[in-house]
Length: 229
Ligand SMILES: C[S@@+](CC[C@H](N)C(=O)[O-])C[C@H]1O[C@@H](n2cnc3c(N)ncnc32)[C@H](O)[C@@H]1O
Image (tube, rainbow, N blue to C red; front, side, top):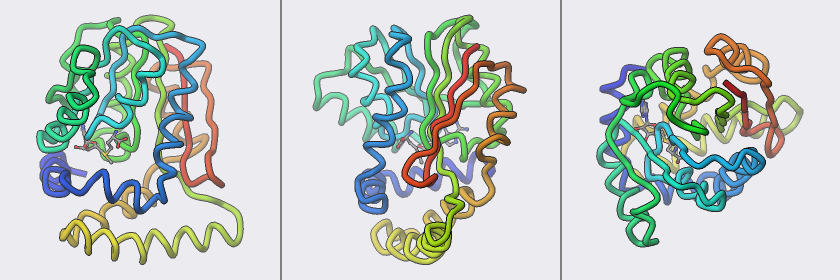
């Protein structure tokens, strides 16, 4: 999806983003982020880059790893503003810094970070492969990528329930609360099109990662992908 479109969409819904996230997922999104961060426990990363950080929930979830510095980048200034407030409220402004930035053109030198992470953001990149290879470029050798993204359950009747929820309930509730008719139509569209499972691991391999892994969560509604540079 075109970057300008995505930016203005997230700018518009930023003030309702957290509420809708927790509401539409029944709060399970917080558990998914924690499970994704758990993949990094053995690595003890000190410098972490959170791409498409939005309102910083994934960046905040890294605090249990006790990193030295976390940098979050995003194209939506309104999402970042809410993230900054949350970070300040928790007295974490020393540890987490948020700045404007595009996944496809990261403003950092090569071999910089111990971990590069992205939650529910890769789906929105204008150029997925460019974003993933940029994450690879800024990681040090041996550094780890963790991607948390929606996927699609395969089993009856969950598959049918999920498709009904995504196509009907979610756009309806999303529109009601965010007052934006497009945004929560866009979400199911991106989820339906995004590569999952082996297809996504192949994209990680092409971007330069190895030791690839996937873990499906909650009947496959979301998946954690990881790899090493
Ligand atoms: C669904 S939100 C996810 C936010 C956060 N990571 C979380 O877990 O809640 C997607 C975010 O990706 C950002 N985004 C979309 N395309 C981007 C890009 N090309 N570069 C950087 N950020 C991008 C949007 O502005 C939005 O804040």
